[in-house]
Length: 228
Image (cartoon, one colour):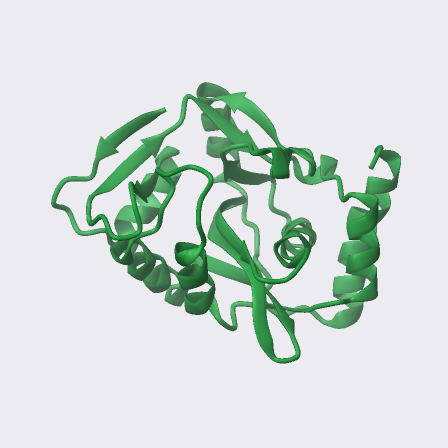
């Protein structure tokens, strides 16, 4: 993995979009470290949208609608919660400049959050960047059992509904591997990215209940063909 110092250039939405279109993304070494690095992994984690696997117990949780799932109603709260969540890797933190840049990117319609609510309280979620037909997942947090996992299932359903073709998860963890995430070489990722950027996809923040159920159904049904 290459980590290139960003220098003194302010992290702007325009710079972020150019970076994502080039296959790199920003990170800080710690929550309070002002230095930002551009990360260029040698292998990239992707989650194939049509080979997404939902474990059996989680399928039941999704179907029971344990959480109220919303999109783009609390983006800033989601990214701040992700920034405050302890990381397994010490070099994957979100500092204030990064958070502020993504909040502005959200205001411009390029960054989105998927949120899980329980009794009016935000208990989990994730956020990422949508560009063409690629969604670049950035981070997630959970304060209730399965909250971030349910958010991921809903994200995949919405991406399939909106005709996205690539879900970039940056790094593959044991957690993401359970859902079907795989690692591919950087050159292969860039080929997929170039093709995905030509796709006109749509991220639907608001989806009617019936349409959402229809979008979730094949995601949950296809998982029955896998071993949970």
